[in-house]
Amino acid sequence: MHLISTEIQDVHIIEPQVFTDDRGYFLETYHGRHFKSAGLCDVFVQDNLSYSIKNALRGLHFQVTRPQAKLVRVISGEIFDVAVDIRRTSATFGHWVSVHLSEHNNRQVYIPPGCAHGFCVLSESARVFYKCSDFYDPGDEGGILWSDPGLAIDWPIPHPIVSEKDAALPILGEIPTEKLYNPLKTP
Image 1 (cartoon, rainbow, N blue to C red):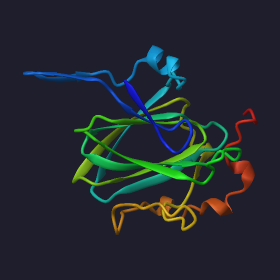
Image 2 (image 1 turned 120 degrees about the vertical axis):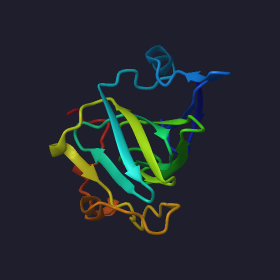
Image 3 (image 1 turned 60 degrees about the vertical axis):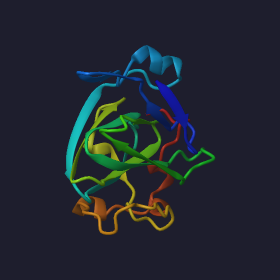
């Protein structure tokens, strides 16, 4: 696997080695020893799959006291994937990075604990598969408004389809600091 660093420390684009022949292709999407040797989370406890239609936007989501590392990939379609650094002690707090993930480029993105995550669908539909390092807890979820003017994320779709819940999320500046990731605090 080839790691590509981003502006946000610990957010990495992962390009797996793809083996092709007349039958199709094969690639490893996750290998615990390789992740561990690269300094990435090497233990994931939950796998998720979402299906979304074109122009759907999901996010920006995070968990407050049980932050999750995520390994995100697309198994059909194409998305614009975003990670926002909400680690209060980080030099890139409030910054965001994006990557196009598709069934054709086979890229993945590794998002560490302490980042909010969201994506929008660019193709007719998309199936997004992601691994999480901690279990989802509905009582622990947090989120940031996708259109937060302070973040100024350059979403590539003009009129996204957003859930009522996501449309009601606060902007980053309205979230109390105790609701944001603090790597020095243990749950």
